[in-house]
Amino acid sequence: MTEAQQDAFAELSYEEAREQLVAVVAKLEAGGVSLEESLALWERGEALAQRCEEWLGAAPRRLDAARHQPETGSTPTSSE
Image (cartoon, rainbow, N blue to C red):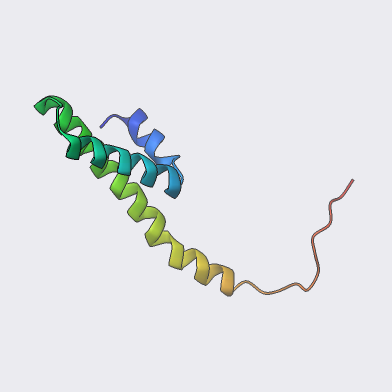
């Protein structure tokens, strides 16, 4: 996978990556594609699955960090 492709995957939200992964799986299950295209789809699916795992793996850490932030008791205001 090229660096540009890795960057594109890194920018995907969980929902975007999951949606694309579902489409890849559906296309593979439907068949009718060449071996070369099947391999490319498989590789894309693997990269999308990894991106989803990254999001899911980071979720508990983000929740823990949010829980441990001190509450200020005030709402932020904008400065003009």
